[in-house]
Length: 243
Image 1: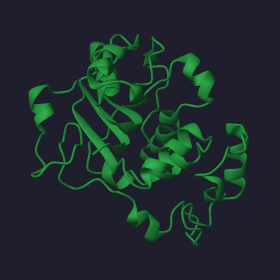
Image 2 (image 1 turned 45 degrees about the horizontal axis):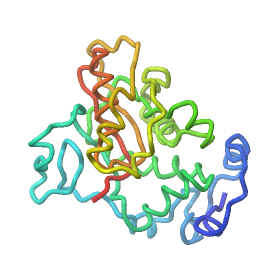
Image 3 (image 1 turned 135 degrees about the horizontal axis):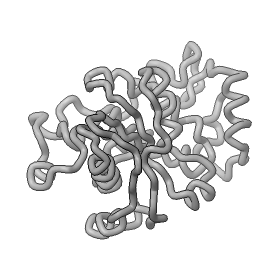
Image 4 (image 1 turned 90 degrees about the vertical axis):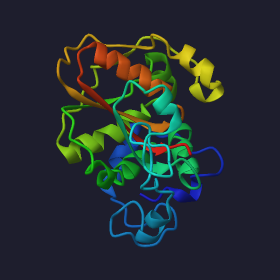
């Protein structure tokens, strides 16, 4: 299904996720979402995929922030996050900084599985987890948006990697303010006690999935909840890292 002509302009036609899923399955992509060239039933042609803002090879292993030597960044050395590693495919810049908001806020959710497929080579360098957990939305936010962007990324990853997807493992207990509107200090206060879990994760390696990591505060709070439930290792998997 070709999405790009109305991707960045105007108010998109609002179709249900079930309708989009039906159309996408009925008509697998044969044209690049960005330039319209033949893409051999892939979402992006080789040229457009190569031009995306890929994360540099040298980056902090904990939060994926680009670094000069590939070692931990200063922030992680000073205050290590609760998660043990981050895998990101892209920098949140250029085309990605348009694609992801279009997916989240413009009813173009089917862009997200296409981007998730491009994460797979990066994930091959990381240990395989026991469970994949999408970062949950509060039920009120889910009703407002109509879908959880983390779920749309996590589902194809779980399917391709043959790792169980666990949707009920982590619960959003507070309908927090949008993180993008807040300072770093306010983000931490906003996420305090935002997640809980009643699952027994004793000794489990869990990967939390989200779309973009900015300060990592949301993922840090989620990782703390998972480790309190017994998880031995928690990784953060995100499409993009803010530079």
